[in-house]
Image (cartoon, rainbow, N blue to C red):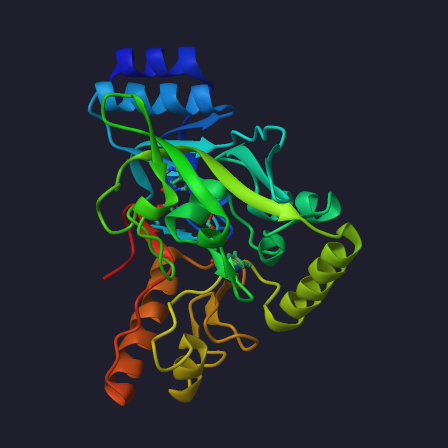
Length: 309
Ligand SMILES: Cc1cc2nc3c(=O)[nH]c(=O)nc-3n(C[C@H](O)[C@H](O)[C@H](O)COP(=O)(O)OP(=O)(O)OC[C@H]3O[C@@H](n4cnc5c(N)ncnc54)[C@H](O)[C@@H]3O)c2cc1C
C-alpha cells in the first residue's frame, strides 16, 4: 500500500493494517481489510473518504456491520467504520412535530429507545434493529409496520469532490429494503447525517410499545450470530416460508446453519466461513426457484473477496 497514502491516512485517524473484519460484523465472519480506520465524527468520515478518493483507492463505509457478509479473503483497499454519533437538539416545528439531525454513525436502536423514553414518537419500530442510521437509509430499514421512509426528511451526502449536498427523502427512491444508494443513483456516496421528523407522544405508552416489540423479537429470532434476514420477502410469500417449504430448516453447511428458529436467518454456530454462508444462500435460492419458480433476492450485501466456488 502506498506509503504517502498511509501517512496521510494516519494523520486523519489511527489505522490498522490487515484488520480482521470478523471483529466488525454481527455475523462474526470476514477476512482482513487491507487498511481499516474508524471515524469518530462526520469530519473524520469525510476526511478519510476524501483521502481514499484522492489516492484512487477503493474504500468501503461500514456502519455496524449488521447487514453484510464479508468474504473470507477480506476487503481490498480501505474500510472506514463510521462511529460518528452526534445528535442535535430537536427543533420544534409547530403542530407537535420535531426535527432532529443525527450523524449517520448513530445507533438506530439506541436512538429509537432514547426517543421513546423522551416521549418522541415515530421511531419505536426500530428499537431492535442493530445498525447505524447510515445503514438504515441504504436499505430503508423497517420492522413491525414502520420504516425509515416514514420519518426521514432529508440526508446530507458527500459528492465526488468532497462537497456536501442535501438530498430530500423524496429523492432517495426509498422502497422495501432499497434506495437510490442501492440502485445506482447515489451509489458510492457517503451519507453524513439524517434529518428525522418525529412528533410528541406519551413516554409511558412509547416505552411500553418498545417492551412489547422487544418481547416479540426475542421470541422470533435466533440468539446465535447472524445478519438479520438473509433474503427479501417476495410479493407472494415471506422468504422464511419458501425456505421452510423446501425442507432447509436447520440445514448445515460447515458451521453455518439455516436457523431452526427462523428460516430466513443464517446463523454462525462458531467457526462459519463466508463460503459456508454463501453456499447455504445458493442452496436456498436454487431449491426455492426449482419448486416455486421465484428467485430469492438477497437482503444481506456481499462485500469483498472469498465466497468459495
Ligand atoms: C439480529 C438482526 C436483526 C435485524 N432486524 C432487522 C429488521 O427488523 N429490519 C431491517 O430492516 N433490518 C434488520 N437487520 C439488518 C440490519 O440491522 C439493517 O439493514 C441495518 O440498517 C444495517 O445497518 P448497518 O449500520 O449495520 O449497515 P452495514 O451492514 O454496516 O452496511 C450495510 C451497507 O450500507 C452501507 N453504508 C452504511 N453506512 C453508510 C454511510 N454512512 N454512507 C454510505 N453507505 C453506508 C455499507 O457500505 C453497506 O453497503 C437486522 C440485523 C440483525 C443482525
